[in-house]
Image (cartoon, rainbow, N blue to C red; front, side, top):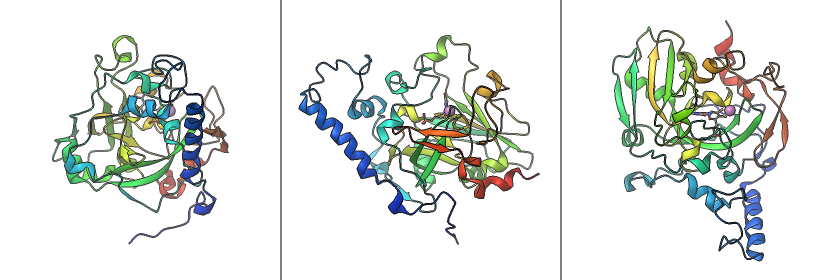
Length: 330
Ligand SMILES: Nc1nc2c(c(=O)[nH]1)N[C@H]1C(S)=C(S)[C@@H](COP(=O)(O)O)O[C@H]1N2
Ligand SMILES: [Mo]
């Protein structure tokens, strides 16, 4: 039995800005370019992916695109929408999210989509191991066969103060962990991204502690909000968003949402994580969104939305307290 409780951030759908309006903005831009006679030919804009010019939405989409799914799985997208989740804000334009990403394996800048062409996320497999009765390897075919995908409208808040509202496709992390039967000794979950310096240039010469790792307590991992995402905007994840499988934990700062996962390990001790290892005073393990705890170098009181620059007050737990606050009462 599922109750739909109205959340503080729920506003009537009529107050949301419908996606069509945003799509029309893109349409206007394309029409504008067409009037100038530039859109179709690309003339004067040169090669958008190497230059500094503004890329078109089609170019952004093409840059991050992954190989098509086997035909038996194409019907899985778009997945059924879980109506319990609403943004309470306008949805972010797909291309605005796709062109402003954090994925340090490929770039220190936000235009990650320009740097992912050598990344090949198919085929893909990942291990789930550590303190569990049935450790095993999964490939994406297993994922698509074993788990029921749903679409969830989630707010995302990066620790850098940018935010977005995007529909993820995925399944609860809890259902994946149940498959391997964690033992009672398992208290934490450690996640690891690929290590492929030949495909991800920043992994060759930087002094970052590759591979990227993240972690949750097992209670956080079993919270219904914790989602393993395989898609965004009704399609499989493009490369820059963490193809083919990433974590989404919307009450925490975005860096906890580790991308392109190759290993998930159940542990007794709190695992080391990428950002906490690099800058422990700036990025703690828990990393719950909190307007009252400033980052050492900036305030966290407000946030701005990708695509529109609209500013909102930051909400504790990113507004998801009803789901997760109980996890943090001693
Ligand atoms: N492997 C890996 N995962 C990562 C990152 C990264 O650099 N590498 N960046 C994180 C940060 S800081 C954020 S805000 C989100 C951004 O997700 P998005 O680019 O899909 O919006 O991914 C997170 N996951
Ligand atoms: Mo972030």
